[in-house]
Image (tube, rainbow, N blue to C red; front, side, top):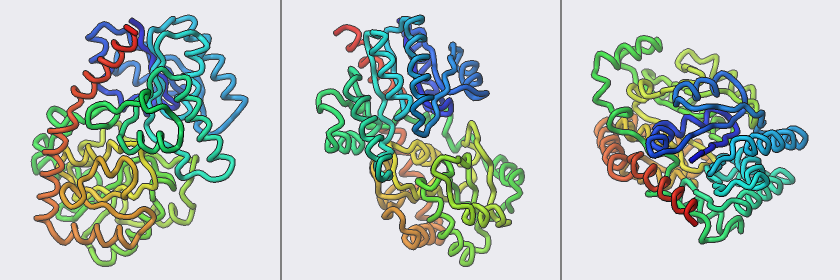
Length: 382
């Protein structure tokens, strides 16, 4: 049985960590297709699978998209996969269309988020049509959260019987036992991590993990930071992720962040677990989400979170129990919630412990993988 995953960029393949090995053990020959680059080759080596490079820019590029569609079609004709599982909006629509043209028996669209939510004008219309096409031509749509499923249904993208959510949601679950486990980071290890970051040992650390783009609320985070740094002189901020040209953060905002001596930019980090280990709070002031893995990862590491009350986040965070939810685009509410947690170490500890217990109870990866395997087999047998 040949299973092919299609993603726009190879970073997304990291969200399938463990899942690919699980499917290989159950008899699947797994391939991955994504845009070319070092990260794609590394993903192939890490997972022990063949990888195929097809350039798929995230932005709307009609000519390049047509070329990518043709390359995917030819690849599928050659590989003759039993299943194509296409993820992300661009990889989804191209992968689904190419798979149907190549007469692949089972075509799945992995709905990881809905970018149209924050788009306007012609771009919004194009993104909506993209979702409709992916849903129309896929045999099954798998949404990462119930709130995304409801929004897709309300928007008329998909039939109710076609779109499923696996388990309690999320794209891959979180391994809170052998990977995201705070017990693996005793005090001396945490001290060494802070030392490597040139952060004083007794300082408080506010963390952000994700793409550094406007839609993630970086403008509001910077405004919040300007307030917090005045009130908490031992507070540092760490930004883990890539600055991306797509949906860029305004240059003055980035300049202020980069010039601050109490801010650390790490760039892209393959495994942020050691960084979670030294965070006191994780913030995610995003405008839209599918199901944010970072909130579950932080929870597994007993780090309380402050996030926006948007799709996906409302399922990853129990407000007042594992973290705090605030309105999007509200830097005052973000500052107030962060201040509340920074002032109360007992509350931080309680929320962190509750977050870990919830991840262990509802978001074990094996539950997601087993549910997905059953979907694969069911669709192949139909």
